[in-house]
Length: 334
Ligand SMILES: Cc1cc2nc3c(=O)[nH]c(=O)nc-3n(C[C@H](O)[C@H](O)[C@H](O)COP(=O)(O)O)c2cc1C
Image (cartoon, rainbow, N blue to C red; front, side, top):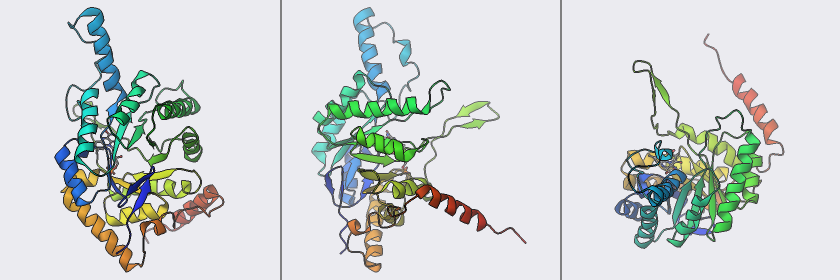
C-alpha cells in the first residue's frame, strides 16, 4: 500500500486531500462524514472582516444612540444566506468542529485592512483551531493605489496576524500580482508558514436585457488547475514554506499533479459541493492509491516536487521558450 501521508503547516496528515474553505464546514454532520470518508483536514468557511467590524459598529451605535437604527456603513453587507454568521457563532463552530472531529480544523479569516478585527485570529486559535488561513481577497481597482502599496499593506497584515497567534498561519493569495515569486517570499518573511495558491476570483457578467450586472459563482473545472500548478512548480524550493493548491482539484490525477508540482496538500471545494462528497473523497483517494501502485510510487512524499522547476535556473526564460513552442505547435486548417 503506498503511503499517502504528508505534512502541512507542521500538522501530520494521513493524505493530501483537504476540504477547502467553503460551506462544507457549515454543518458538523457533513464535516464528520467527510472525515470518515478520508479527508485529512478541513479549512472552515471564512469569517469576514466586514462581519466583525459590522458587529462592533452595531455595538458602538447601540451604546451611543440606542437600538433604533443600523449604521449605514454596514448597508453593503448581504442580509442573509449561508455566510450570515456572527463572530460569536463562528467561534462556536470552530469549537464544535474541533470537538466532533479528529482531523485538523483550520480556521479562516478574510480581510484586508489592519485593525482591531485581526484579534479574531487569536480568538479562533483559542476556540481550538489547529491553524489559521488568512484570505486577503481584494480587487485592486483604485488607480491611486499602486501595486507596491497593496503588497506592503498585505505583508503588514500578515505580520500583524502572525504576531497575535501561536498556531501556524497560511495565507491564501491572488494570482493577480506582478511578481508572484517576490510577493510569496515577502509573505513568508512576514511569517506565513504556508501559502495557498490561488484564491478564485469570481467574475461578474452583464445581463443585456435587464441591463444589470450579474454576480454568479461559477464553480471550477480541472482546467483551472493549470495556473496554480505552474506557480507551485515555480515556487517549490524557492520559498521556504508549505504550498497548498486550491482551484481545479476534481480528480485523483489532479491531486497527483499537485503533489508532483510541489504542493503539500490539494484542497477541493467545487467537486465536493456538486457531487456526493463522501463518495468523491473515497473515490479520489482510492484512485490515487491505485495510480501510485501501478506507477510504483511508494509514498506521496517521494512524489512531492518531483516535477517542479526547482532545477530550472531561469524559469522566466524557460516559460518564454515554452510559450513560443506552444504557439508553434498550432496547426492551421488546410
Ligand atoms: C460556495 C463557495 C464558498 C466559498 N467560501 C470561501 C470562504 O469562505 N473562504 C475562502 O477562503 N474561500 C472560499 N471559497 C473558495 C474555495 O475555498 C476554493 O479556494 C475555490 O473554490 C477553488 O477551489 P475549487 O476549484 O476546488 O472550487 C468558496 C468557494 C465556493 C465554491
